[in-house]
Image (tube, rainbow, N blue to C red; front, side, top):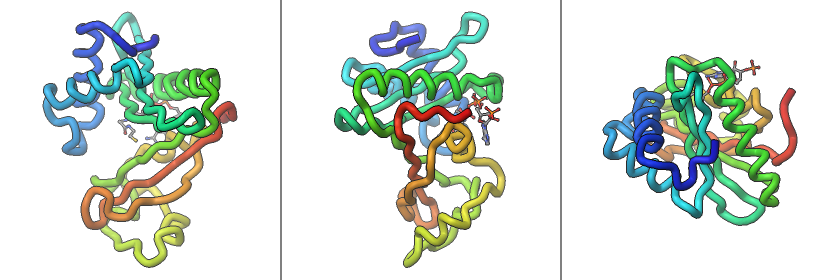
Length: 180
Ligand SMILES: CC(C)(COP(=O)(O)OP(=O)(O)OC[C@H]1O[C@@H](n2cnc3c(N)ncnc32)[C@H](O)[C@@H]1OP(=O)(O)O)[C@@H](O)C(=O)NCCC(=O)NCCS
């Protein structure tokens, strides 16, 4: 379901999903903050898709078109009670199809670790951030492995993007190359 220019009910549902899916980090803590993000993501110059389960919005994905070849996936959120049912995969694959249709070559994203999900959390990765990346692993839980399952590669890290020891892991995928 294409969400650009979606109506008020869908926007409210999307905002609720953002606050629920990201409740582990202080990013969209209130419905007001989440709704502002949703309104931006659903505007005409962005791309956004949703998936329903039993008639209710179960998750949604947005993208920013930085240029014709380069799209940024931002954000993706699936209702916690709908996790691991293929909703996230369907969202990303739908976005990939649309990106390919519009001539994009690469989709990239930043997946932050500001909550201790990986072993990079709390470490000083200078002066060898790329070496640290080769040792990356999950400590509690982190979505980078979800993106790996979908064929994204780890392409970099922005050290301390969210404060000391809270890095942003960069991932990218060539459009049109499905994982199995
Ligand atoms: C990350 C997220 C979008 C995944 O959505 P989902 O609907 O549960 O994912 P799917 O069921 O489509 O899973 C697709 C594949 O990834 C795997 N997967 C899903 N979440 C995973 C995780 N956290 N770690 C490792 N693998 C994961 C699934 O097992 C599945 O593998 P398979 O296709 O080989 O069976 C969802 O957990 C979410 O909304 N999390 C909170 C918000 C968030 O972290 N967004 C990303 C920030 S960058």
